[in-house]
Length: 300
Image (cartoon, rainbow, N blue to C red; front, side, top):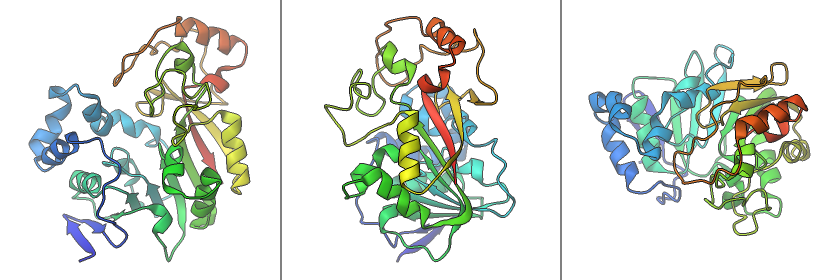
């Protein structure tokens, strides 16, 4: 059976290869148990301090996109929907198609949103899926950096985006969030988010280049080569995962405003200098955009 409903949410297993290749491990079994019990789920953040729980269940995650003015009736494709941390932010008068490699994560997402009737979750690799429609918006929130693992070509990041572009309406928009490999926290001693190796991105991913983040200019080049032009860059602070504020080129931070810097929820880190003071210097010299820890990009 290729489809099932969990509450009002449709799950489609047509493209699922029965192998959850991307996982946080056994804690996902615990998360699935939690979301099945509404009362426990609503209290989870008051009783837990583990990073995986905070990352997947914190309502702060939605800040990355909840502010965006999606048109009523828009069709949105969320690639890499995970456990649904951001999915709920899309559900206001729109139609959501989620794609997720993991069945377990898809079930967590479905339980969280089981009372919403405008969500479909397709379990599988985006590169294997064919659609009979095009979308108004396609989102990649923390996804592009993994494209090389699932796109077997000589130019995986560009080719992944080219494939995405074929499913986007002519007037549609791509919404992309990713770490900046030259983010100030990495210079100050925070480990690379995906490899847990200090200075790995800054030094060019010499140890593990299967997962790659990019600078602002590199992202512009990749988007252009894939046939996109960026409309706007935004700068989530302190990063896109748990953003407290999102700056733009029209409203950049001012001296003294960037004070949430020594956070590190999942790894020990070095602290080589006072990041707030360095940020103040970068702001004064018009360089903040190049050293923002993360980017949010609207492209068309």
